[in-house]
Image 1 (cartoon, chains in turn yellow, purple):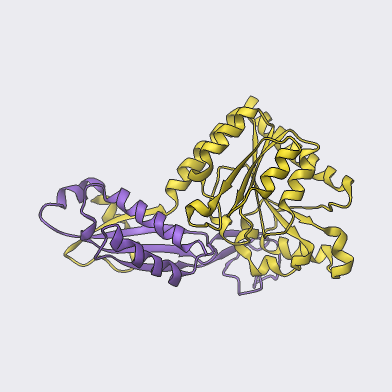
Image 2 (cartoon, helix red, strand yellow):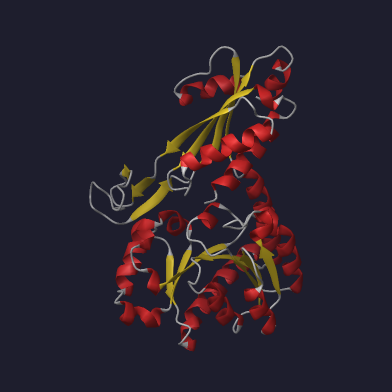
Length: 240
Length: 126
Protein backbone atom coordinates (compact mmCIF):
# COMPACT_ATOMS: atom_id res chain seq x y z
CA UNK A 1 0.00 0.00 0.00
CA UNK A 2 2.93 2.33 0.63
CA UNK A 3 3.86 2.30 -3.05
CA UNK A 4 0.33 3.28 -4.01
CA UNK A 5 0.35 6.39 -1.86
CA UNK A 6 3.80 7.33 -3.10
CA UNK A 7 2.69 7.42 -6.75
CA UNK A 8 -0.68 9.04 -6.07
CA UNK A 9 0.47 12.58 -6.84
CA UNK A 10 1.82 11.57 -10.25
CA UNK A 11 -1.59 10.61 -11.55
CA UNK A 12 -3.04 14.10 -11.25
CA UNK A 13 -6.19 12.75 -9.69
CA UNK A 14 -6.64 9.95 -7.24
CA UNK A 15 -9.01 7.04 -7.60
CA UNK A 16 -12.48 7.39 -6.11
CA UNK A 17 -13.12 5.78 -2.72
CA UNK A 18 -14.83 2.58 -3.83
CA UNK A 19 -11.90 1.46 -5.99
CA UNK A 20 -8.39 0.35 -5.19
CA UNK A 21 -5.71 1.57 -7.52
CA UNK A 22 -2.93 -0.79 -8.56
CA UNK A 23 -0.08 1.41 -9.76
CA UNK A 24 2.09 -0.28 -12.32
CA UNK A 25 4.10 1.84 -14.73
CA UNK A 26 4.80 -1.38 -16.63
CA UNK A 27 5.59 -1.86 -20.28
CA UNK A 28 2.61 -3.19 -22.26
CA UNK A 29 4.95 -5.33 -24.36
CA UNK A 30 6.63 -6.94 -21.35
CA UNK A 31 5.73 -10.46 -22.53
CA UNK A 32 7.50 -9.72 -25.83
CA UNK A 33 10.50 -8.11 -24.15
CA UNK A 34 11.06 -11.02 -21.77
CA UNK A 35 11.46 -13.43 -24.70
CA UNK A 36 13.58 -10.87 -26.57
CA UNK A 37 15.84 -10.56 -23.54
CA UNK A 38 16.37 -14.33 -23.44
CA UNK A 39 17.23 -14.40 -27.17
CA UNK A 40 19.64 -11.50 -26.73
CA UNK A 41 21.54 -13.41 -24.04
CA UNK A 42 21.57 -16.66 -26.01
CA UNK A 43 23.08 -14.91 -29.04
CA UNK A 44 25.48 -12.83 -26.97
CA UNK A 45 26.79 -15.90 -25.11
CA UNK A 46 27.34 -17.78 -28.39
CA UNK A 47 29.04 -14.74 -29.96
CA UNK A 48 26.50 -14.62 -32.78
CA UNK A 49 25.64 -11.12 -33.96
CA UNK A 50 21.89 -10.70 -34.38
CA UNK A 51 20.61 -8.00 -36.71
CA UNK A 52 16.99 -6.93 -37.13
CA UNK A 53 16.64 -5.75 -40.72
CA UNK A 54 13.69 -3.43 -41.22
CA UNK A 55 12.42 -1.27 -44.07
CA UNK A 56 9.61 -0.67 -46.52
CA UNK A 57 8.54 -3.40 -48.96
CA UNK A 58 10.86 -3.26 -51.94
CA UNK A 59 13.56 -1.23 -50.21
CA UNK A 60 16.16 -3.94 -50.88
CA UNK A 61 16.35 -5.88 -47.60
CA UNK A 62 16.67 -9.29 -49.30
CA UNK A 63 19.15 -8.03 -51.90
CA UNK A 64 21.33 -6.51 -49.20
CA UNK A 65 21.36 -9.69 -47.09
CA UNK A 66 22.12 -11.79 -50.21
CA UNK A 67 25.09 -9.55 -50.97
CA UNK A 68 26.31 -9.90 -47.36
CA UNK A 69 25.96 -13.70 -47.61
CA UNK A 70 28.86 -13.74 -50.11
CA UNK A 71 31.24 -12.31 -47.52
CA UNK A 72 29.90 -13.39 -44.11
CA UNK A 73 28.92 -16.68 -42.49
CA UNK A 74 25.24 -16.00 -42.02
CA UNK A 75 21.83 -17.53 -41.35
CA UNK A 76 18.54 -15.82 -42.09
CA UNK A 77 15.09 -15.66 -40.54
CA UNK A 78 12.63 -14.50 -43.17
CA UNK A 79 9.51 -12.68 -42.01
CA UNK A 80 6.70 -12.14 -44.49
CA UNK A 81 2.92 -12.04 -44.35
CA UNK A 82 2.76 -14.92 -46.83
CA UNK A 83 4.85 -17.01 -49.25
CA UNK A 84 8.36 -18.48 -49.20
CA UNK A 85 9.66 -16.46 -52.14
CA UNK A 86 12.60 -14.96 -50.23
CA UNK A 87 13.56 -18.05 -48.26
CA UNK A 88 13.80 -20.07 -51.49
CA UNK A 89 16.27 -17.47 -52.77
CA UNK A 90 18.47 -18.00 -49.71
CA UNK A 91 18.15 -21.78 -49.81
CA UNK A 92 19.36 -21.69 -53.45
CA UNK A 93 22.63 -20.05 -52.42
CA UNK A 94 23.10 -22.43 -49.48
CA UNK A 95 22.28 -20.07 -46.62
CA UNK A 96 20.51 -21.66 -43.61
CA UNK A 97 17.08 -20.05 -43.61
CA UNK A 98 13.79 -20.29 -41.74
CA UNK A 99 10.58 -18.76 -43.02
CA UNK A 100 8.03 -17.20 -40.66
CA UNK A 101 4.70 -16.25 -42.22
CA UNK A 102 2.59 -13.89 -40.14
CA UNK A 103 -0.67 -14.91 -41.85
CA UNK A 104 -1.05 -17.44 -39.00
CA UNK A 105 -0.93 -14.51 -36.55
CA UNK A 106 -3.68 -12.52 -38.29
CA UNK A 107 -1.42 -11.23 -41.11
CA UNK A 108 0.59 -9.15 -38.70
CA UNK A 109 2.56 -6.22 -40.10
CA UNK A 110 5.59 -6.98 -37.91
CA UNK A 111 7.38 -9.81 -36.07
CA UNK A 112 7.13 -10.40 -32.32
CA UNK A 113 9.79 -12.14 -30.25
CA UNK A 114 7.61 -15.10 -29.07
CA UNK A 115 6.72 -15.96 -32.69
CA UNK A 116 10.32 -16.33 -33.78
CA UNK A 117 12.17 -17.40 -30.61
CA UNK A 118 12.10 -21.14 -31.44
CA UNK A 119 13.36 -20.48 -34.96
CA UNK A 120 16.17 -18.30 -33.68
CA UNK A 121 17.19 -21.04 -31.22
CA UNK A 122 17.32 -23.43 -34.19
CA UNK A 123 19.34 -21.12 -36.45
CA UNK A 124 22.05 -20.62 -33.85
CA UNK A 125 22.75 -24.39 -34.07
CA UNK A 126 24.05 -23.91 -37.63
CA UNK A 127 26.94 -22.04 -35.98
CA UNK A 128 26.68 -18.86 -38.03
CA UNK A 129 28.61 -15.71 -37.14
CA UNK A 130 25.73 -13.44 -38.08
CA UNK A 131 21.99 -13.99 -38.06
CA UNK A 132 19.75 -11.58 -39.95
CA UNK A 133 16.06 -11.27 -39.12
CA UNK A 134 14.38 -9.90 -42.21
CA UNK A 135 11.34 -8.20 -40.74
CA UNK A 136 8.01 -7.73 -42.53
CA UNK A 137 8.31 -4.87 -45.02
CA UNK A 138 6.91 -1.89 -43.15
CA UNK A 139 8.27 1.50 -42.09
CA UNK A 140 6.14 1.88 -38.94
CA UNK A 141 5.11 -1.16 -36.91
CA UNK A 142 8.26 -3.32 -36.54
CA UNK A 143 9.99 -0.48 -34.68
CA UNK A 144 7.93 -1.06 -31.51
CA UNK A 145 8.89 -4.73 -31.10
CA UNK A 146 12.23 -5.66 -29.63
CA UNK A 147 13.43 -9.04 -30.98
CA UNK A 148 16.58 -9.32 -28.88
CA UNK A 149 18.80 -7.94 -31.63
CA UNK A 150 22.24 -6.35 -31.27
CA UNK A 151 21.71 -4.10 -34.26
CA UNK A 152 18.63 -2.42 -35.73
CA UNK A 153 19.43 -2.00 -39.37
CA UNK A 154 17.08 0.09 -41.43
CA UNK A 155 17.20 -0.43 -45.18
CA UNK A 156 16.02 2.62 -47.01
CA UNK A 157 16.07 3.13 -50.78
CA UNK A 158 16.64 6.24 -52.86
CA UNK A 159 13.22 6.14 -54.63
CA UNK A 160 11.51 6.58 -51.24
CA UNK A 161 12.66 10.23 -51.19
CA UNK A 162 14.64 12.30 -48.70
CA UNK A 163 11.69 13.45 -46.57
CA UNK A 164 10.70 10.13 -44.98
CA UNK A 165 12.88 10.44 -41.85
CA UNK A 166 10.77 13.37 -40.65
CA UNK A 167 7.55 11.76 -41.88
CA UNK A 168 8.19 8.40 -40.19
CA UNK A 169 10.30 9.38 -37.18
CA UNK A 170 9.67 6.32 -34.93
CA UNK A 171 11.62 3.99 -37.20
CA UNK A 172 14.45 6.43 -37.77
CA UNK A 173 14.89 7.31 -34.08
CA UNK A 174 15.15 3.64 -33.12
CA UNK A 175 17.52 2.49 -35.88
CA UNK A 176 21.20 2.05 -35.03
CA UNK A 177 22.25 1.84 -38.68
CA UNK A 178 20.67 3.07 -41.89
CA UNK A 179 21.76 1.51 -45.17
CA UNK A 180 20.77 3.68 -48.11
CA UNK A 181 20.22 1.35 -51.07
CA UNK A 182 19.85 1.82 -54.85
CA UNK A 183 22.29 4.75 -54.68
CA UNK A 184 22.93 4.32 -58.41
CA UNK A 185 19.44 5.79 -58.88
CA UNK A 186 20.35 9.04 -57.09
CA UNK A 187 21.05 11.00 -60.32
CA UNK A 188 17.81 9.77 -61.93
CA UNK A 189 15.74 10.57 -58.84
CA UNK A 190 17.61 13.87 -58.38
CA UNK A 191 18.11 13.04 -54.73
CA UNK A 192 21.03 14.54 -52.87
CA UNK A 193 22.53 11.81 -50.66
CA UNK A 194 24.08 14.39 -48.33
CA UNK A 195 20.69 16.07 -47.88
CA UNK A 196 19.19 12.69 -46.96
CA UNK A 197 21.94 12.01 -44.42
CA UNK A 198 21.28 15.41 -42.86
CA UNK A 199 17.57 14.76 -42.55
CA UNK A 200 18.28 11.41 -40.79
CA UNK A 201 20.86 12.95 -38.44
CA UNK A 202 18.41 15.70 -37.53
CA UNK A 203 16.34 13.20 -35.57
CA UNK A 204 19.01 10.61 -34.77
CA UNK A 205 22.48 12.18 -34.64
CA UNK A 206 24.26 8.98 -33.54
CA UNK A 207 23.06 6.73 -36.35
CA UNK A 208 25.56 5.11 -38.72
CA UNK A 209 24.64 5.77 -42.36
CA UNK A 210 26.05 3.52 -45.09
CA UNK A 211 25.32 3.34 -48.82
CA UNK A 212 24.85 0.35 -51.11
CA UNK A 213 24.10 -0.36 -54.74
CA UNK A 214 23.40 -3.88 -55.99
CA UNK A 215 24.90 -2.83 -59.35
CA UNK A 216 28.27 -2.14 -57.75
CA UNK A 217 29.73 -5.26 -56.12
CA UNK A 218 32.40 -3.32 -54.23
CA UNK A 219 29.84 -1.16 -52.44
CA UNK A 220 29.10 -4.02 -50.01
CA UNK A 221 32.66 -3.95 -48.56
CA UNK A 222 32.19 -1.03 -46.10
CA UNK A 223 29.02 -2.66 -44.77
CA UNK A 224 30.82 -6.02 -44.33
CA UNK A 225 33.67 -4.28 -42.53
CA UNK A 226 31.26 -2.34 -40.34
CA UNK A 227 29.32 -5.47 -39.27
CA UNK A 228 32.53 -7.46 -38.70
CA UNK A 229 33.75 -4.64 -36.45
CA UNK A 230 30.49 -4.71 -34.52
CA UNK A 231 30.73 -8.47 -33.98
CA UNK A 232 34.37 -8.19 -32.95
CA UNK A 233 33.33 -5.60 -30.33
CA UNK A 234 30.75 -8.10 -29.08
CA UNK A 235 33.38 -10.86 -28.85
CA UNK A 236 35.80 -8.52 -27.07
CA UNK A 237 33.14 -7.64 -24.52
CA UNK A 238 32.68 -11.38 -23.86
CA UNK A 239 36.35 -12.15 -23.27
CA UNK A 240 36.98 -9.12 -21.07
CA UNK B 1 -1.57 -0.82 -38.02
CA UNK B 2 -0.34 -2.84 -35.05
CA UNK B 3 -2.81 -1.39 -32.51
CA UNK B 4 -4.67 -4.72 -32.44
CA UNK B 5 -1.52 -6.52 -31.28
CA UNK B 6 -0.71 -3.85 -28.70
CA UNK B 7 -4.31 -4.12 -27.42
CA UNK B 8 -3.91 -7.91 -27.12
CA UNK B 9 -0.67 -7.45 -25.17
CA UNK B 10 -2.35 -4.86 -22.92
CA UNK B 11 -5.19 -7.19 -21.95
CA UNK B 12 -2.75 -10.09 -21.43
CA UNK B 13 -0.58 -7.96 -19.16
CA UNK B 14 -3.58 -6.65 -17.17
CA UNK B 15 -4.88 -10.18 -16.56
CA UNK B 16 -1.41 -11.30 -15.50
CA UNK B 17 -1.23 -8.45 -12.97
CA UNK B 18 -4.73 -9.18 -11.68
CA UNK B 19 -3.81 -12.73 -10.76
CA UNK B 20 -6.71 -14.13 -8.76
CA UNK B 21 -8.79 -10.95 -8.91
CA UNK B 22 -11.99 -11.18 -10.96
CA UNK B 23 -11.43 -9.21 -14.22
CA UNK B 24 -15.06 -8.00 -14.00
CA UNK B 25 -14.04 -5.81 -11.04
CA UNK B 26 -11.71 -3.70 -13.17
CA UNK B 27 -13.25 -0.23 -13.50
CA UNK B 28 -10.61 1.60 -15.46
CA UNK B 29 -7.10 1.19 -16.79
CA UNK B 30 -4.68 4.04 -17.34
CA UNK B 31 -2.36 3.78 -20.33
CA UNK B 32 0.51 6.02 -21.29
CA UNK B 33 1.26 6.04 -25.01
CA UNK B 34 4.19 7.98 -26.40
CA UNK B 35 3.50 10.11 -29.43
CA UNK B 36 6.54 8.56 -31.13
CA UNK B 37 5.35 4.98 -30.59
CA UNK B 38 3.52 4.80 -33.90
CA UNK B 39 0.22 4.01 -32.17
CA UNK B 40 -3.05 5.77 -33.05
CA UNK B 41 -4.79 6.21 -29.65
CA UNK B 42 -8.33 6.02 -31.06
CA UNK B 43 -7.57 2.78 -32.90
CA UNK B 44 -6.01 1.30 -29.76
CA UNK B 45 -9.06 2.29 -27.72
CA UNK B 46 -11.38 0.72 -30.27
CA UNK B 47 -9.52 -2.61 -30.18
CA UNK B 48 -9.31 -2.55 -26.36
CA UNK B 49 -13.07 -2.10 -26.11
CA UNK B 50 -13.59 -4.99 -28.53
CA UNK B 51 -11.18 -7.41 -26.88
CA UNK B 52 -11.72 -6.54 -23.19
CA UNK B 53 -15.29 -7.94 -22.82
CA UNK B 54 -14.23 -11.19 -24.53
CA UNK B 55 -11.47 -11.57 -21.96
CA UNK B 56 -13.77 -10.95 -19.00
CA UNK B 57 -13.06 -7.24 -18.44
CA UNK B 58 -16.69 -6.33 -19.00
CA UNK B 59 -16.74 -3.11 -16.94
CA UNK B 60 -13.37 -1.67 -17.88
CA UNK B 61 -12.82 1.70 -19.50
CA UNK B 62 -9.43 2.77 -20.81
CA UNK B 63 -7.90 6.17 -20.17
CA UNK B 64 -5.16 6.82 -22.67
CA UNK B 65 -2.74 9.63 -21.88
CA UNK B 66 -0.37 10.73 -24.62
CA UNK B 67 3.24 11.26 -23.60
CA UNK B 68 5.10 14.02 -25.42
CA UNK B 69 8.08 13.50 -27.69
CA UNK B 70 11.10 15.03 -25.98
CA UNK B 71 14.49 15.83 -27.43
CA UNK B 72 17.50 17.30 -25.70
CA UNK B 73 19.90 19.70 -27.36
CA UNK B 74 23.49 18.47 -26.94
CA UNK B 75 24.84 22.00 -27.23
CA UNK B 76 22.71 24.06 -24.85
CA UNK B 77 21.12 21.12 -22.93
CA UNK B 78 17.65 22.54 -23.57
CA UNK B 79 14.89 19.89 -23.43
CA UNK B 80 12.19 20.55 -25.99
CA UNK B 81 9.18 19.11 -27.74
CA UNK B 82 9.86 19.33 -31.47
CA UNK B 83 7.28 20.87 -33.74
CA UNK B 84 5.91 18.66 -36.50
CA UNK B 85 8.80 18.95 -38.91
CA UNK B 86 11.56 20.76 -37.11
CA UNK B 87 13.73 18.54 -35.00
CA UNK B 88 16.30 21.18 -34.11
CA UNK B 89 16.61 23.09 -30.86
CA UNK B 90 14.25 26.09 -30.79
CA UNK B 91 16.60 27.92 -28.42
CA UNK B 92 19.99 27.75 -30.13
CA UNK B 93 18.92 26.29 -33.54
CA UNK B 94 21.40 23.42 -33.18
CA UNK B 95 20.55 20.19 -34.99
CA UNK B 96 22.80 18.20 -32.65
CA UNK B 97 19.93 16.77 -30.63
CA UNK B 98 19.21 13.47 -28.88
CA UNK B 99 15.89 11.71 -28.59
CA UNK B 100 14.94 11.30 -24.91
CA UNK B 101 11.40 9.98 -24.69
CA UNK B 102 8.15 9.52 -26.54
CA UNK B 103 8.20 5.75 -27.22
CA UNK B 104 6.25 4.78 -24.10
CA UNK B 105 3.75 1.91 -24.19
CA UNK B 106 2.86 1.63 -20.51
CA UNK B 107 0.11 0.48 -18.21
CA UNK B 108 0.07 3.21 -15.56
CA UNK B 109 -2.60 1.88 -13.21
CA UNK B 110 -5.52 -0.51 -12.86
CA UNK B 111 -8.51 0.63 -10.80
CA UNK B 112 -10.25 -2.34 -9.20
CA UNK B 113 -13.67 -2.05 -7.60
CA UNK B 114 -13.60 -2.84 -3.88
CA UNK B 115 -15.49 -5.89 -2.83
CA UNK B 116 -15.23 -7.67 0.48
CA UNK B 117 -13.66 -10.80 -0.96
CA UNK B 118 -10.99 -9.27 -3.17
CA UNK B 119 -9.33 -6.80 -0.81
CA UNK B 120 -6.78 -9.33 0.34
CA UNK B 121 -5.54 -10.03 -3.15
CA UNK B 122 -5.24 -6.35 -4.03
CA UNK B 123 -3.10 -5.84 -0.93
CA UNK B 124 -0.83 -8.63 -2.07
CA UNK B 125 -0.49 -7.35 -5.65
CA UNK B 126 0.34 -3.81 -4.58
